[in-house]
Image (tube, rainbow, N blue to C red; front, side, top):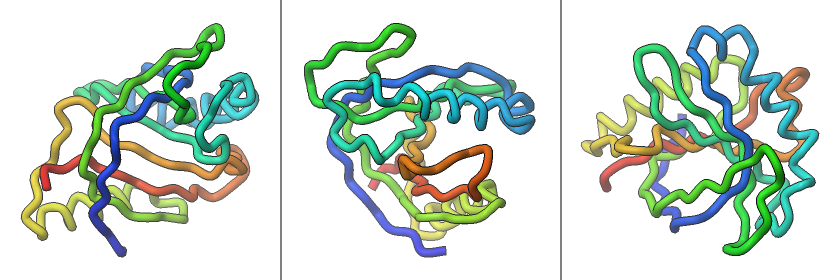
Length: 153
């Protein structure tokens, strides 16, 4: 696994929210949620890059988490019905690219890299940020994404 440090400026995104358990996610609810977002992403005006889908995980606890699928947008835009505006502060990230079926192994490897390199995890709000290509079909394609974990650099 090749990991690197990345600084990302604060940004705004518009997208849809899913709240559920890890069990629900493992049973495929996230895949169906992602597919639904693909059908609606063209409703988001002023997307900075409509072919870069963001997955934002928040509030991970014992039972579950909140997950957004979104597009980064310019500052002032209309929010489509059933979607939310998300403001993400600037972060330093440990990042890696991954393609395969064992995404959890990529996360484990990146957390190990963070620890081995003496960085501290900064998950006071955002747990992790994922980036998917706009053409990714979660029901058909092998996962392909960039994984970013917030750190204190």
